[in-house]
Length: 496
Length: 95
Image 1 (cartoon, rainbow over the protein chains, first blue to last red):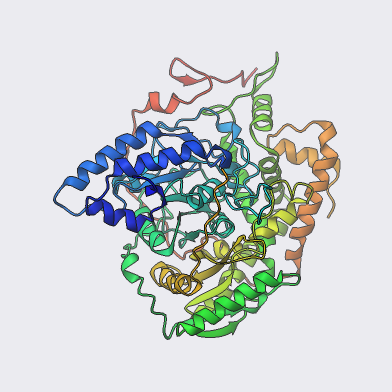
Image 2: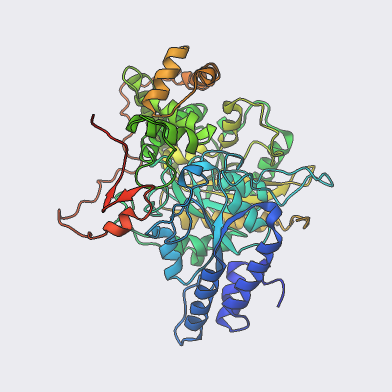
């Protein structure tokens, strides 16, 4: 049977349960697509043998009398940031060359316990630092979308660029992503798929290579909102191995997708309307606002006065935490160790190993983090940023206390740009890609990006909804209503 | 605030990343761009604001102080670039 790889998770689940198809057929269909999609550079470590074993086991479960979990037999791609037992896990970095963890991340374990199949590991920016998937040791991941008839390669966004590209190109039914400043939502928007970052603490971070621990969250990247609900439910849950994991019951998110948002109050934050915002983004946002209104929601203008300071706050806090987290890559316990010269001691070993193993963006952020934490600058930078973060979070608490159920914003300031087009820009220009998403990480809130339209060159654009903490079910339902109204069905033309 | 070459070299040293002398001017330039951007935070009135410790007002879980795992020497050493006789091997630390 051909075309199985184009199914959504929900469609595949129903066919698997009805025994119309087997997980083995579904998995083979995906593996065949991956084989022809080398030009996208999305999958970087294939695990075809493991996938076939897991599919066979899922087929056995599906033969049983009991109802199987929704994810049973569903083939997925796993971002390279997740440690997967016995399978290369490099976080897109040369410093983890050859690393094969002896343990499984909680999120992938949860997915496997639910019967999911792993097709392989997906490309990403090195240590999840980037907005274009151009900092990976595996080379750039490529967006399956192109501008009209132009064959210039475009970015799938970052850092979960491989995940976004693989889902958009139907190489897998869904993929895991992680989001520290927008790394699920921005690539989802650039590739016309759905991506949700849940509330901080909803998904265990155990076994996910740490970038900035107070901001990182895993989430699903899927073809539509229903699939996001199904896959998120399988990924999350309390984990005693992560002390920041919330001990809260996980609702049935899919059952909450009614599409009924009558009486909901949607906030439109005035600070997100920025100078120089392209007309197309402006129009997309206005259209999305009208759709929410038509669906019965009340739309209200709101103010989040500290929005302007979110990016500078992020670029203190994230590098500070990264410099601390990445101190463990020293060439002693795992990964790369530099060849030493006669007489070199341990300090030379650390310095050479880290200079060889980390790419330029990672080195830059580790050093910025070192600087803002160093004696004499800790209060001026790091402590001040933590105080501003409190104010950013308070802005959201205030609007939610005023009765706002969800906040609608654009997901990105533009459509996908060309690979290499930002090469001469300074780092700060690249950081602006996360301008609409980063506040959500600082406040620990759930946020979802839904494809909502095409720009004049035929590239997908996304809208973002931000929800109350722990209310992912409600947020997904608002996104479901928006998805239904936007009716986004475009797919990239196959050139790869 | 402007970062000079000496500061750039000191930060690289603290971060344990070797940066060759020729690369220091470009590094200092990048620091200045990023720190210039971060400088905006000095405009914010943070008087009386508590620095955020945790985004969720939640007490960290605690557990009984007992051994829950262990006897994993082979697994712990399995990815080491150099391991000998059950230990990680590194260059001489003390002369």
